[in-house]
Image 1 (cartoon, rainbow, N blue to C red):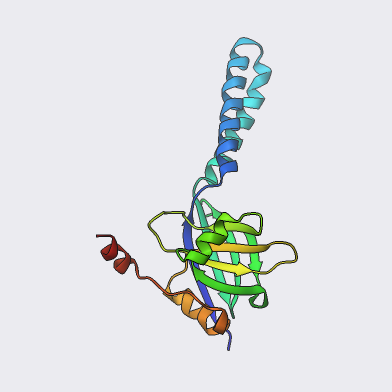
Image 2 (cartoon, rainbow, N blue to C red; image 1 turned 60 degrees about the horizontal axis):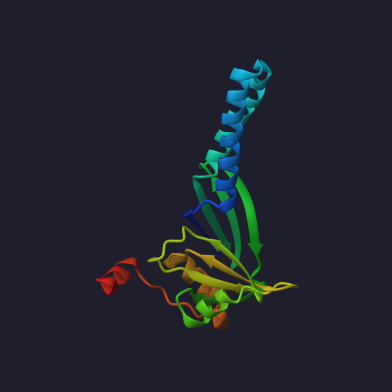
Length: 179
């Protein structure tokens, strides 16, 4: 029997999205002023830059979708709830371990960027509890930061067995500890 679980989480826009937004806005404003002063041929560039601006604004509303099937994880980016792009697929055989991000081991490994490729598919809220998935690759190993709920963790616990080192922290318990 196949096991299937899906989770949708909000994501933080990438840095390159902000750079694109700035460049497109600059192009739009400069071509608008050139259109008014030099020639109406710049109208085409204004219209094109407005189109590009709206395409870039779509990526400001970013979500990540985790699809777990029999222990394998597929991660996709969804922009403005209409454009979906598969980012990564992780096979169960490539997973080394699953840890809480707040653990000392993970915090130490996150500072050693020469040894690991780090991917963060979360909203990156400082007070939230996230989970680090270690994945072996042919080059540097990867640390993938995920925002997993209790169902996803139970799913992974069933398939990862001895590689599973995470403990679930409920949102209410976390808030009580801070108070």
